[in-house]
Length: 123
Image 1 (cartoon, one colour):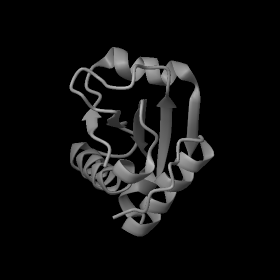
Image 2 (cartoon, one colour; image 1 turned 90 degrees about the vertical axis):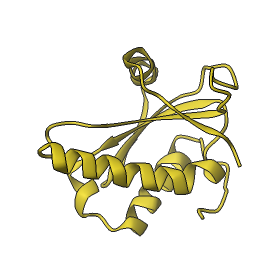
Image 3 (cartoon, rainbow, N blue to C red; image 1 turned 135 degrees about the vertical axis):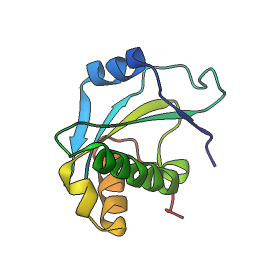
Image 4 (cartoon, helix red, strand yellow; image 1 turned 45 degrees about the horizontal axis):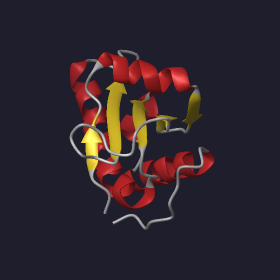
C-alpha cells in the first residue's frame, strides 16, 4: 500500500496543471505531474488534489462530486497509481450521475492512458 497525501495549496495545483498531462473521461478529468521527489513533506509517495468548478452545480452538488471523487481515489490509487507523482482529479457534471463502478473504471482508464497505472487491483 502506497501512502497517499493531499494537495491543498494553489501552487501545487498550478504545477500539476502546467505539466500538461491530462486525460478526460466521462466522469472525471485526471491531471498528473511526475517530476517530484519520491516522498512529499508529509511522507506520502502519492499526493492527490480534488477540484470541482461551479459548472457542476451549486455548493451541495460540488461537495457531493468531491466526496465521490475522494471515495473512488481512496479505492483505486493506493494499489494502482505510480509512486512519486502528484494527481489532480477534476469533477465533471457526469461525476454526479455516473455509477460508482463506472467512476472507478474512468479513473483506472485515465491512469492507464497517462502511463501511471501500476496494475494493482481496486479494493
